[in-house]
Image (cartoon, rainbow, N blue to C red; front, top):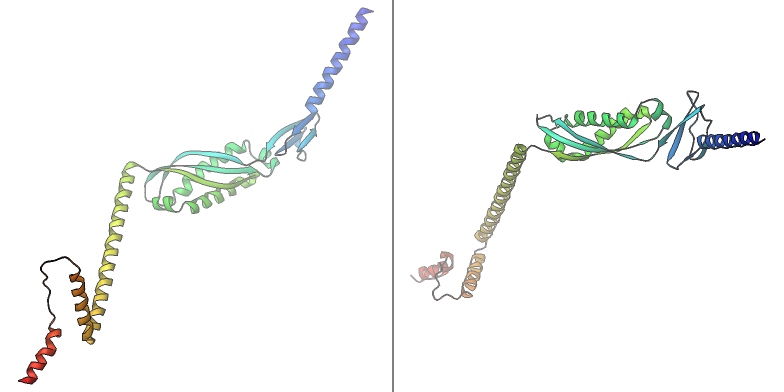
Amino acid sequence: MNNLVASSALGVIAIIIFVIYFLSAAIKILREYERGVVFRLGRVIPVKGPGMVIIWPIIDKLIRVGLRTVTLDVPSQDVITKDNITVKVSAVVYFRVVDPIKAITDVEDFFYATSQIAQTSLRSILGQGQLDDLLSKRDELNAALQKVIDTQTEPWGVKVTAVEVKNVDIPQEMLRAIARQAEAERDRRAKIIHAEGEFQAAQRLSEAADIMSHNPITLQLRFLQTLSEIATEKNSTTIFPVPIDILKPFYEMAAKKQ
């Protein structure tokens, strides 16, 4: 009797354990940003989730796929620019899965594959431009990288939303050359500005001389203004030239008397 009771208790315990195992294996909870790709006897069935999902243990296999945007750091790559300058460039790629089934069935590891595509595209796209383009046309290069990488990852159900070039490490000798070039450019601009100032000053003086030649009275007014400016200075002795035009009326009067 005791043996019968003991065997019945063991049977009940075994049934309870089996039920608990079955429920734990059959019931899956997927978060809002997760989807479940289910293989039933090796064949894909429609995507499950989010929320509570019930599958058949042993028959079904569920793979969780996240739909949130993933930040992928692209390690520094040696890039040879079009003008034969070697630089190290690193970038960051933002992507997300838009088709969970393709991301699982069409590529073995979509994260690793996207990383490799990003590295090779970084070297090929940036190598097509010159160093000046890499430094000054960053937005255009980012857009070109995003387009190329997204085109290659689209068959995997992966959408690349943005690519940003982070760091550009330039050799020291090139940094010195760039500094010398920038200094020469500043000197050139300074000389151009100085020459333009001299030209404008000469043009104004020429216009003033032309006005004075047609209106002699302006020369006298300018002379009186100069006297006023000199008088404000605390000088014991003042020497100033007298224009001939001021004395011309006196010469004419003396000539008439003769």
